[in-house]
Image (cartoon, rainbow, N blue to C red; front, side):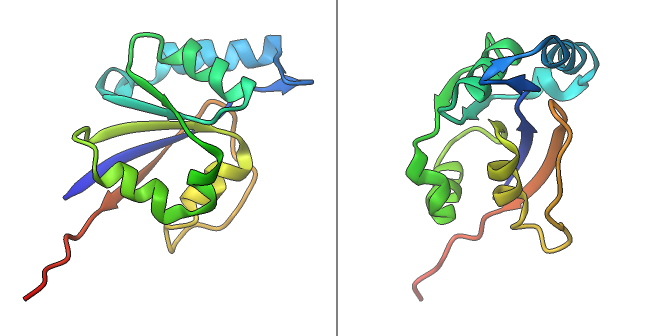
Length: 131
């Protein structure tokens, strides 16, 4: 089974408040990202900036707020995704958390990510068989 996960770093902020620059980033994402219409589910961090970014981008898409323990144990995060019916999912979070998720790709090296940019990660889940 495969799923598409778009990882999006939250909008630019200052003191946990989205800035004018951040709202421009949200506007650009809303108007330029063609695959946005295909997103079936949004998973977002609990922090205020990620949550507000998520609401501003995906106001009509079902959303689930990520509990803090979920990213600390990456298997929990991926198990959640695997057990969902949706195949095209967005995750909105801070730079550190998006890097944690993207680090599962062997060709990825940790870096400072652009705000409000959809980084695609194709996930393939293999069901285990007890033969």
